[in-house]
Every structure is written in structure tokens, then in C-alpha cells.
Image (cartoon, rainbow, N blue to C red; front, top):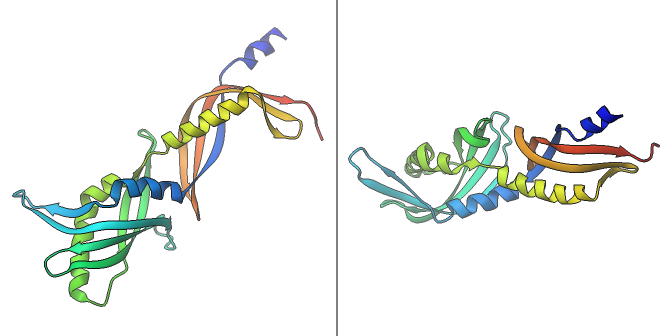
Length: 207
């Protein structure tokens, strides 16, 4: 009995799925990208401004070769196409870095061309220039702050025992976590998280 008591106080691991809606990521991206000027700089340091981002939306890609679809609404600032409002869709492939615990854009494809050939070529220049640098840098998703909020909320409930199903309770404390996998679903990310802590499952009733 003494050994069993010691084991009950030891560290254990729990894998929990956490859903994070795309709307959460949209809010994050809007803060970073709305008002951003899409520009480039040549080897001599001369800069060109192409457009300003006005709004964006994020969802699951309908193309199975890509994970997400990012729609950008922008206003052009070029000499030939000034103050024109345009929308494009970027299909994005994601890469999860387990060491840094970050999701990054790995590959992309531009969708949403117009019937104007010259405008299309300008659009390609705008987006390809922007994607090579700034957008890929901004399209980094760090889920850890959101999971830390969930962890704090769970620990508050575990103090008084959390009833998982009728008659079965989980109590203790979760101390740390590590993301093991991120799966883009229809309306949200499914994030699989490995938690470490001291937890005990109490069974008070069996059906």
C-alpha cells in the first residue's frame, strides 16, 4: 500500500485534444497585418510600395494539396493601378516545427485572378514579393499562449476535482505541456497536447 501511495504522487502524462477556432487566428493576424504595406526592396536598397492590406479571412482549403485558404482584401498603390480594391486567395501549406513549437507557411499558391492580364501580372509581383518575406514571417502561429490559458482554467477546475463522466473524477495539477501534432480541420485547428503533472483518476461509481 505504501508503494501505491508513492506512485499516486508521481509525474504522469495526459494527451488532450484542444480545438482552436480559425476566428482566433484571424484576430491574431488582423492585428499584425491590417494596414501593412506590401512592398519590396531591390539589391540597391530602393523600395517600391505595391498595396495596403485592408482585411483578411482564414478558412480550410478546398484544395486537398493545401491546408488553409487566406483571403486578403487590399488597396493598390502602384502608378498604373492606384486605389483599386482587390481580393485574392492564397492557398497555404503549413509546416509544424516541434522544436520551436511553431506553425509556419511552407508553400503557397495564388488564386483569384481577374480578366485583366496587366493587373494579374502586377498582382503576381505584389504577392510573390510579399510572400517571400513579410507574409511568411507574419504567418507564424504560436499556440502556446492560448494553451496556457486553457491550462490555467483546467488547473482551477482540477483543484476541486473535475468530473469527467458520472462517478469518475480527475484531480491534481498539470504543470507543463508540449504540442505533438496540429491538424487543420473544417472550422478549427485540432491541437494534440501532451501534458505533464500530478493527476489522479478517482472512480466513485461504475455503471
